[in-house]
Each structure stands twice: as structure tokens, then as C-alpha cells.
Image (spheres, rainbow, N blue to C red):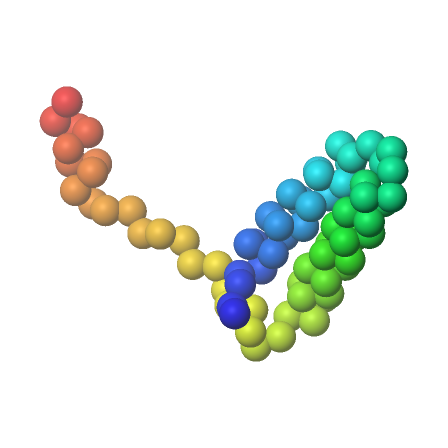
Length: 73
């Protein structure tokens, strides 16, 4: 599965946010925290190695017709 570097960075941010909001109160919470930390480490390893599976992020092109439509309003 190919992911862009920007997508991986966004996923890392989301995982880190979830980790920061966690309150570890029992074993289940501790287990979930370990899973999230492993997930974060795996995602960071993707950005560090930048293998061929990671594709560059492609921005969507804007349509020229939208500007003309907005100018007419």
C-alpha cells in the first residue's frame, strides 16, 4: 500500500494527539497506549526510510472555470 509522506506525517500527528489525551487507568488502557506507541514508531520509520512504496503527495489541480464563475458573481 502506497502512502504519501504528507499522509504519513498526518497519521503520526493524529496518533500523537490521541496518545497525549490518554489517561492510563487500567491494563486495557496501558495495552492501548503500547499499541499506539508502536503504531507511531512504525509510521515514523516509514518517513525515515522513504522507500519506493511511499509516493509523493500530489496536489489536486484547480479548475480554471471556477475563477471565471466567481468573477461573474
